[in-house]
Image 1: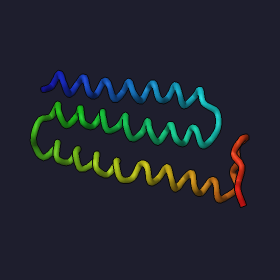
Image 2 (image 1 turned 180 degrees about the vertical axis):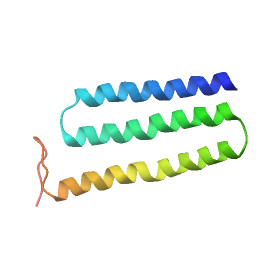
Image 3 (image 1 turned 60 degrees about the horizontal axis):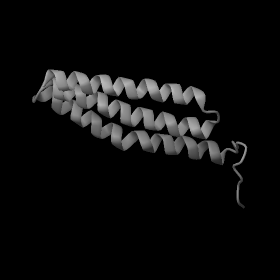
Image 4 (image 1 turned 135 degrees about the horizontal axis):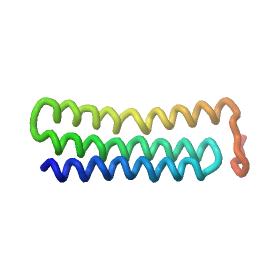
Length: 100
């Protein structure tokens, strides 16, 4: 089980590194916000699942699974709130028109 956990942790780190490379390549606030939300959610969930698998069943794994649930609930919400706040404050990018 430790090998599977380490493979999952490596995959999570690889997802984050590839996401950061894409984040640096793409211009614009809204694109970067979307990418950072995906990197944060998917990469961290894969990494934490690897930690939980590596540690086996126990109280630590239960805490890691609870943390994964918190990430699933809060990461997309915070990205949405940040994007909406930027949009409502008047932040615009090229090609994004505001319908009134």
